Image (cartoon, rainbow, N blue to C red):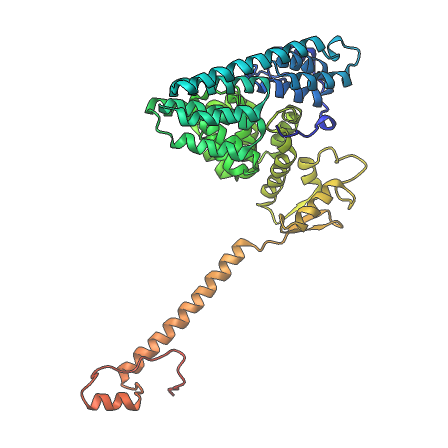
Length: 475
């Protein structure tokens, strides 16, 4: 699995004891009290989420790591158990669970080895009997065993060997979903996309296709987000069918779909697209009901209430810094959303005072030591950076405290274009009328060849085309 960045330095929210208790149930903790139903996750991702929380959130570290230790023991994953114990020893050296349970490790190693040997021997017997269904089930049992004990490479190989022995479309679908789960945990997103393509091309029954489409779409969207394709990921999350429910909680929950889809859309879509594709999306609205703050943030952005939108996102930043999939993208996504907000704010104006902009985009600066009109102000430096990068076509007037747009007046531009078109039309009409007058008066100048041709009866009635740029002058 990919190494996740450490967000401990950015985690500043105070968390009460109720949230710590929620971790023991396998629920995703939150940093602020709010009307929000607990999100229950299943499978091996429970450990991953708990371990991330324990290593990134000091207030929740002890409880989260203890829960992670219990998860590792339940799955008989020795490597995960040892890693969680080491992490707990760093934050709570005196805790009884911070010392390695050597007896459990030895017993588990013997148990895992014996179980592995038994499954391999059974698989050999199935191969000798040449019964395809038994061989498929033997590989599946062996792959499940390796997956539960943390040997993801061996699990992936076992699942891949199932393919040659699948005799029905649902067997192939089951095998591919297991392969997707392994690839997600390993962080192999290209393989996730490859397996998703195979799932979409599998010849499943119509009812099975409808049932699996939500999981397929969610896995595809997750892989796109991890590859930094935020617009494509947003569109994929927005198209996830509502029947996802709790059917795929070992990889992604409906709450995750709402958060990932909403934030990716905010970072990559304009206001019109957000209104039509997100807020007016009847299907995605069911997901947004699980995370109403995302819907409010998008609505505020569409209504030019950028301060309210940014405040909501900042309030939930600690939550997202503890999210297993979203954590590493938060700085990039939040920066995009902020930059888009500044662009949209400037759009209707030719000039804006820095003080008024700072009240919206840097309220902590207003009234402080660093005034927004100073060159050393972080907000002014941010504007200068956006201008230097070509994001804003404007200039900063520090003397008058203004941000002045360099874009031309659209009304004047339309008027200028209209006058130019009118002038071209008048000139074209003048030349056409002049040519018509010349033809009517019989003053058309013919070349010698044309004159000879007319005398011979060839091309009678035809004359040379009069060019608007001709050198013939008529007095």
